[in-house]
Image (cartoon, rainbow, N blue to C red):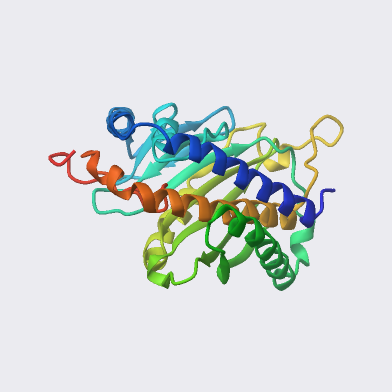
Length: 301
């Protein structure tokens, strides 16, 4: 099985590879960037599907979208993410947004990792996991300083890793900040997972630290509304024919966390430099850590 240190190193490498991609994107003319951002938002508005409705998540699962929420599928979802400074994400299926007063976004992805054994969740040590993430982030800070980005400090768990073995659902969230950043300025990835036969589905809530208690029920509602298709469920796993993941739940949390923490410095730098560009696009969208947006009334879009 892949160990935590290997995952941490790989995640940091991916983060700084993304930095090069963002640097290239930043060199594009402002006018072209604004035009693409506006076009991406228009595509999102055209593609949105309002709840209540049933949303197919590839060939893996079904999401029973509640009323008051809207689903944005690919390719519109990916186009907006890229217009906001993110690299192309092959795992992205789409995203869910709330009503006109909602400041959150839930990204839906499927990772074809193979079947993930969950037996390590019975006795995992979340304090030891936190220590590993903290050490990995401190190591990554050396590269951040070399690149001219501020270091990161892991603040602590927003939600300690919690796994429900009966439903094969995992929830966790961690906060990190840059020097001088207040708690209110932090953005949070509130991560929820559903394990299946071929891999795992993620529904990641992205919101402000100050709003997490208000917004996280939306993430839990969506997680409960996700059902794997017959034959794709966790219990459908066939050990003689199916692919087995190279890691367990603890390594999954550590690897994903390291990747996200590694990206925060890059995304913050992008958002700070281009905040005015995003606002001037006139599309009724506000970027929060380059991934969160708030949809204004249709009269303003």
